[in-house]
Image (tube, rainbow, N blue to C red; front, side, top):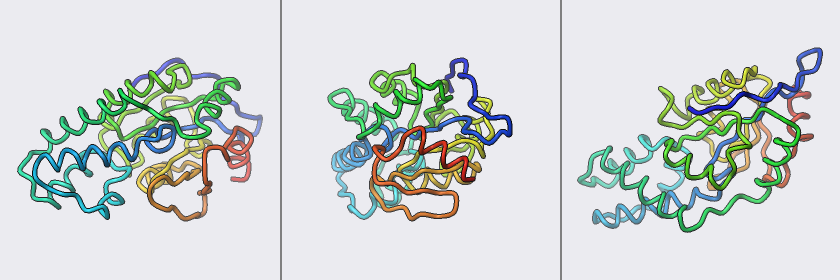
Amino acid sequence: MTSTVPAPLTRTADGSALEAVLLDMDGTLVDTEGFWWDVEVEVFAGLGHTLDDSWRHVVVGGPMTRSAGFLIEATGADITLPELTVLLNQGFEERIGRSLPLMPGATRLLAELSAHRIPTALVSASHRRIIDRVLDSLGRRHFGLTVAGDEVPRTKPHPDPYLFAAAGLGADPARCAVVEDTATGVAAAEAAGCQVVAVPSVAPILPAPGRTVVGSLEDVDLTFLRGLIALR
């Protein structure tokens, strides 16, 4: 976990204001969910196995241990989990080295949060080595804290990453807005007690109490996020 000194919180006298914004990475800020699947397909092809496209919805958004473990079991591939993890991370790093497209609205949202000094954290199931590469494009200056999947005892869908992020920013999870693109990430944020904005990338996500579903980050700005906490 890496951090800088958090920006001042944006509480009102009654403590009802937005205190922090916690953002997922893959599929939320950067258009990379497809990259992971392409790498998985490529690696398993090299092992002599073809991945069923329906498995994509099973592995999306989860920690690598779960996703890679599922694919090993589903294919019967002769490879260990640590060996596969190395191959997948290497393949992904090569892809983002060639191109790293940001999601529509990501640059504008990050700039707005920074301009208003909103405490912001990047919370990802990806490993630290991947996050550090992506931060070069996203801009480290936008985040007071970053949490990687290999830095917490339990990653998404468990609440631990979001609880760590909220605590690191000195914020009440109930006053944090989380932006996620997968059901796994949404489950983690909701389990942490946060207000969730879902921007589905690969698989649909239905609205639910405490959860707002939008079509794009273009629909999300600071006024929108503050409104979610105020309604709560």
